[in-house]
View 1 (cartoon, rainbow, N blue to C red):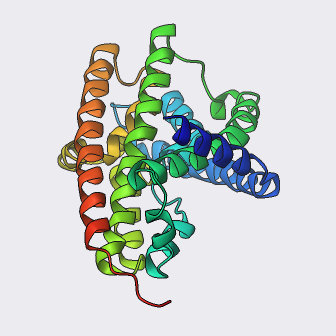
View 2: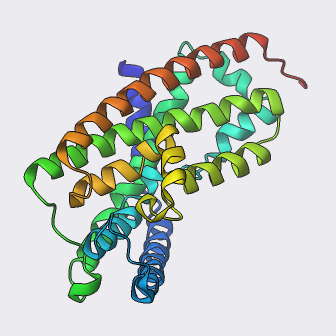
Length: 267
């Protein structure tokens, strides 16, 4: 465990050094959030106001989405890991006396956490001083806020487990392009990142609830504003735990099998 904590600390501190990238990403996310809010405002004013989510809750959802984007978006790839498989550098990892699944998991987890640490607070601060109609709201209650933190943490753990399956698939496909495009689009759409799930047709919402992506992003963000009640949030946390056990177990098994069958060419 000490080995993996050391990798986590090194990767996290390394991620904190990229402040220029953090500033550029911060500006991009802020203006993307403003644009998304304006699009939704036009939809609401056109008479398409849904009864499932109030305007203030939707604005809060969008700002939280942008503030914690690094924790909930699937398409944040680590190309160093892709190259380890496609270029044969995985052989160096295989020589280390560590579990490769756990090592890669820690690398991905710490990278996302470092990016979120640099970006979330400025977005929250700016969004809290905007005009009332576009301002982020406070949590509905202390219980909602605590469940938000718990579900956001579990969502990150689940998201990294999902992304690990993509990296593992490269052992078979030897190209990350297809997996990146397919899972990136799936995760963004069915996680409620493109269209908030309450704005989707009912039949499509049921599809989202059956897939793991929604539990990474939609659940924690809507718990914060109280759009998802406490009882339903607690059930959602249990679902998150179930998906985590399933995907981490399957991913670890698949990684070990791929490592045993891996062929490294060149030399």
